[in-house]
Image (cartoon, rainbow, N blue to C red; front, side):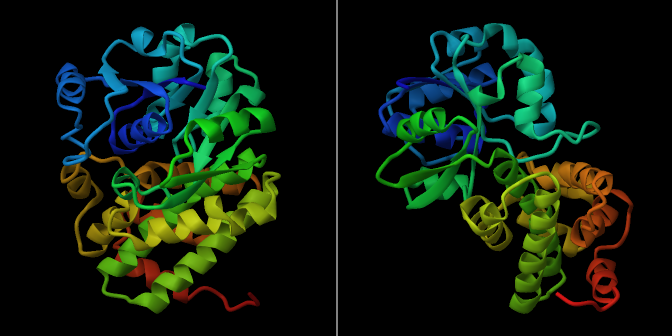
Length: 331
């Protein structure tokens, strides 16, 4: 895979375009706004999302999706998860016939409770063996700065996963492969919800014991749901499970943790949304994760608590209190 298209020029899409270019790919980066595409191409920098990061010469930006997709062997989807379906309706006719479709998105679709790979297959008609997902501790800024990081390429087709692995392996970015697409996608989606809870606790002034408890019980919550959906338990002990969860719940670079922290300090959801241009996927996905869990009879108390704060108007201060008053039971 030497020709790649990245659809979505936010911080993570731009970072992954850099990773692919550093690995030897020719990369077309699709941006919606002409001024952003022009700045990336002319200045080799995405000042809106990654100021100070120099992009390789082999990354070129365009607002024309057809131009970006022309001849692409790897198509990387890096838009907010809730906008994927609408974007794919426009892009599907332009996709090269056998291109691998790689999802960078970590969310569950509202209304349908579908994972991103399921949405991709449904809208494009692509077989499941053509669709892969990238997950793991993927804080964009650190990777853009070429700090060492590992990740997981999940795909039911082992050969295709290995091809994607080869296309994005660099001296600072180490991809592993995993056939458990369900587990990897679910870990990436639910960890955003748990990170919101950790951020809320941080904003309320709670410390390391509280965060460690939320991370640990959040991992159990994720694994319970994953097992109900047919995922492999070992996936949640790896990079796409525990690794991604720890990074997202602990780092100030995490959008979801930062969003939750502001809620814990007393801001409303609307106030936090108006204060940032970045997307905190967990704010919307918490509702679809809860719907998915209820449909499978899985208990997800942390997710329920986050939904009450983000969508039902419950004060953040009551979240931890409500969780601590739950009935005692064996771990």
